[in-house]
Length: 497
Image (cartoon, rainbow, N blue to C red; front, top):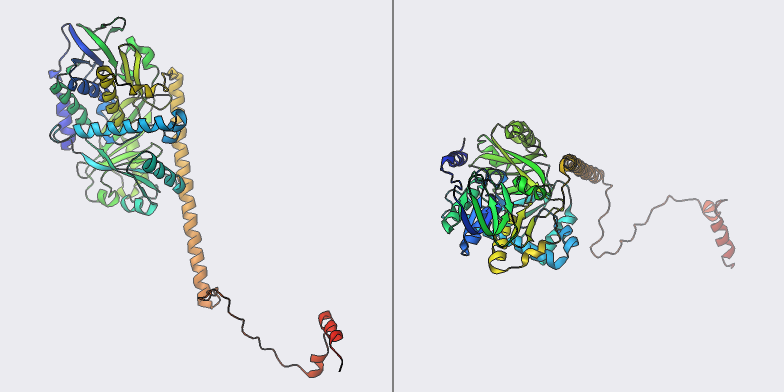
């Protein structure tokens, strides 16, 4: 096992150092949930001078926040065109700007000085499974001209120079997007929050919450806490006291695997140094620890042991990059994310002093960081930009029926993506065969001397060469053929001498 994953395991092994809340406490802000969103809120609020207490039912980053690939880029899970249709161009542009600020929040924190071994690296490539050049051009224009985002469009040839597979066509390259060690980042975030003055209590679930009155009350198994503001940042694991809020999220378990060292061949087949994700949200991968491939792909709406999906990850890698051969998966991990019905995160104030920051499934690390900044500044500075998320209300996700439907939609989506990709590759092969056939035909024509004539330089047609005809007897020439009525008419019109 690599140094990266060993160090994380050792950090998680020191669970005996967890601090539980065993005494009554007062704070300005109580954050429930020590994932990326909750810790970002705690860090920003503590930096702004508030007293902050974080309650975590298990341990820091135990779920999806500590089990992700660490890709940081602007945007949301909801496609930009749909976001504009939903809330209008101006509000969509402001939300996009906030998402970029969230990415910069991560970048500012994820330095070697703050988080030793975090390993930031630049560049994210979003590849397309289908040949959609027109859509690519339209999207590039929108991102660069309207949303002030630095992007590059890559043609299929350039994509295939760095990714040796015929599965991908065009791509959008984000040079300012980046990736970090996702597991180390969540623990580094907790360390920064503690350093700023926030108090984090693990193994301390919220048994009940009374959000009435100016001072809210939270009961834990061994103590009580009072706070002026409560922020619910526990996603689907908020528990019985907040069951109605949890039911607005569809739980989806996402799994990933890490291969054994692959040597130089992985760099020959995958020459891109940053993160790669496909436009359909099926695959997400990058090289880690020098020559190992970290790959996220399988997805379900029920919990299972991550080891169960090692075979699925291995087969998916073999499908996309057959040149890598039958790789060995030595490490697997996964976690449950909460997806909203409308595809946007849930950020804002539910009632006076009660805030929510959830629904970050498929949103990216930038959105949880954005929520941390926004909510802390809303509470302490009166920042009202959280109202931009007001159109995205809390919508029931359908319970057990919603899970079944979500699984079916996911299967259908992956099948549709595979079918569209197969059709795109078939059309590409057909175009190549047509070009080869035309080239062979043109070569055959040139060899036979019957190829098409080149137009003259001046663009004027050359006069046709005179056609020599065999000499005919005078009598035959004077007498028109019986069927040549034009010749008869010419004879009648000939003047007599």
